[in-house]
Amino acid sequence: MTRPAPPDADVAPVPLRPIVAVMTAGWAVALGVLLLLPAGHEGERWWWPWTAAIGLGLGLVGLVVARRQPAEDPAVRSGSSTS
Image (cartoon, rainbow, N blue to C red; front, side, top):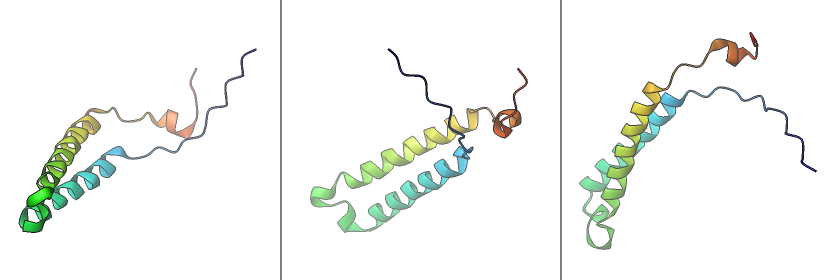
């Protein structure tokens, strides 16, 4: 016997672009701080700036993906259906 599918949850739309932009800016700040402070990239911490650089790069990729994401249909947002 199979379980019935759970009802669809009413999910509020979340603006993706501002979230990705803030996180990307955070990685940029982290990279700047790590490069300015010698303790942030010397000795066993040599990999810390690379982590921030990769986070920044992935954030930029995320911004491109978020820009290409189609805008949500207002009919879907309001819950009305035409079919």
